[in-house]
Length: 432
Image (spheres, rainbow, N blue to C red):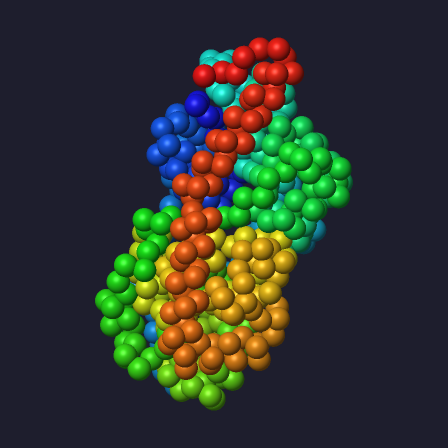
């Protein structure tokens, strides 16, 4: 099949950092191509000088291991950059300006996409990753009568976890219109499916497709001995791994409260924090907080690492943790931990309960309950057999249900059903 993959989010530009967003894009495209389909990618690179579209945004270069400095060390732990002029503008005005730019960006993207579809009329379907205020692809798919599959990862309310929504009525109207017009909608959780149904989108065209992991890149066969040695972990240490940013919604700050409680019961517990930018205020605040609480020996920091080196860092851990998650999300790190065969501690939010089972493939804790997080870490630290059982079951789930190749196969099957339904309605045969 010939597929046009569209991402019109203006924040995804050359040099952008990676994360779940980028991973989902690149792995989906890669798996579709592995199945033998032609995938033409149109993203915001197409708007740059000489840009022709394409995916492949990667993370920043690797940083060296960041060890915490002890109290009394005269060297600075890191200095946050001075606030930019933009940060001096009142927050409501910043948000309003940002969202206005998103809308104007889509007008420009509309022209680029329209020009492409004038040149090529042979796409079997368009696959678009939705972002707030994104309307160009929906309008043009309708204009050119091309089936549209919409990937829906979060509602407009997710922006409230960042800076808020500046043009909320506009964003809400576009979100409902785009989801209603799509021939099929792929949500990353049943919670999001219910959300869209509540907005009037027919449930029959909404398909739940959780995030996933690459079985080749993330495997229990990946070795972590070199990373453990690099960070000074001993064979007695039980290493708890966290991969992600230090934003509030990643919940890393909860580990500062959970760590002392866990260490009281097991002095061999250690934490490997993978991610975080040197000099970034939240990252530096976390490191400073660990120092102030006397946790210098408990925490190690990798800083940002290239995505291809994330598996070896997870391999260096014994337990992995998701401190906090939304009720509707499907954190990519969940499936990468699972694919590595790691025992997992996770919040008992609705979306994760669709994937994991307490006591079988993970240990669930009450969202934000640091005492329960600590207790779960202690339980796993003292029970290697339980760690192994949970990890093996988690890996089995990824092999059977939650890998990118399987997701790509389901996308193609959904597309074929959409194309067949359109053909039947028009009285024409399906495209080959």
